[in-house]
Amino acid sequence: MFYALFSKKNNYMFYMSIINCSYFTYQIYFYILITFIFFPLNIIYGKVIQEEAKKLGKTGTLLTPVGAQREGNQEGSIPEWTGGVTIIPAGYKKGDFHPCPFKKDEKLFTINFENYKQYITKLTPGIIALIKNYRKTFYMNIYKTHRTASFPDWVYDALIENALNAEIIENGNGIKSAKTTSPFPIPKSGIEAIWNHILGFRGTYISRYGAQSAIMKDGSFTIIKMVEKLYTIYAQPKISINDLEKQNIITFFMQYITSPPRMAGNALLVFEHLNQVMYPRKSWVYNSGQRRVRRTPNIAYDYPGTASDGLRTTDDWNGFNGAPDRYTWKLLGKKEMYVPYNCYNLHSNKVKYSQILKPNHINQKLVRYELHRVWVVEANLIKTFRHVYKKRVFYLDEDSWLCLAAEMYDKRDQLYRVLLSHVINYYDLPTIFTTLDIYHDLYSRRYVACQLDNEEKMVDFKTKLTKKDFTINALRRAGIR
Image (cartoon, rainbow, N blue to C red):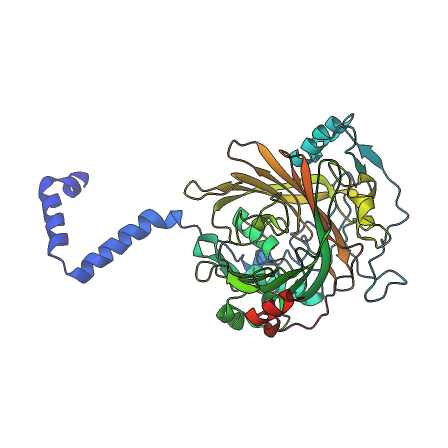
């Protein structure tokens, strides 16, 4: 048999039959060959089978709707998820800062330079670096873990639909058949996990009044106040997937600075798209000094973040944002880590910025750390692209997909920057989101504090916004103040 197949005579007849076949037949041979050789390399990401999706549910299932493990850990230090914060604390009313639901909790213990090695398996490399760098002043007060993350019921419904339908497209640079929130509650890859973070539900309409500051080595700082408005088309409760994909928009974003006077009026407008190959991010800036709008396609990736004094990049806002195309993404699994969580003290309007912002790092007395399970995702720069970060590691909350911490490495594989995101449950919506992001630059030994809100108006999740609020004319109006 093998002789008949591979004899010279039969080989000659076989080759001649290909040469003499019609162009159409030759195409069939070609596509069959390509399919069998290359199809295994074309990994399909996305939707899970019906049986797997049955693991998701609000009650009585192995996994929560977000895809988190419902049960606690064996030691009992991480409790079962029972719905998160579902009852608004007594006395709270719309427009208030959010009081802590756990005021009676006592500190369990403190981690510092003297004892951190006892807990090293539950500390991120970034936190270890901060402990070592600031050994006399940086410490972590550990409290009882509360799994407070919660979302509206229609968001939970969307999560389960997404699990069955959502897919990665354009080699990871877009998604389809998803809406509202994280597309892949049962992720199989790093690219799915980071899309869960990018598209996690934070609200549909947001007006945020915040401040940020780049702290000098001696602890001095200048507060830069700004207003941010977001209209998330993707998170509209009743939008259809067809309409969403036709518009191809995730969110409209506008940011404008209100003080100090020398910077007031500078404004930014961004359109973020679902399919980022078809339509990359669009952005415009209004320069108050020049009094004109300018299209700026370079406000992405490692372009310096707004008013950050060069201490963070555009794409590390909120942990990570924008197109993921410059990295390969690897899902490293899930770990138990001590991370900032339920940081209501840092959110309080009874605390002044001067009480938070200190030399080298923020006031650790105000920070609450808890033990939580996090998804660990590693991103490595593709050699054909450039970025100041060669490698990045993200720690994504299993109960919300929010980035709680991250490490960024330089071209020499040295730890360069560390992000710590201090989150609370905004239970009037509800959603879990940051109240303060801190970006530590280990080279300059400085940090930038973003999303400060203690001395500002409270974030408004019910603001009425339309597409008309995110036009070039609207940008110009926002800048003229």
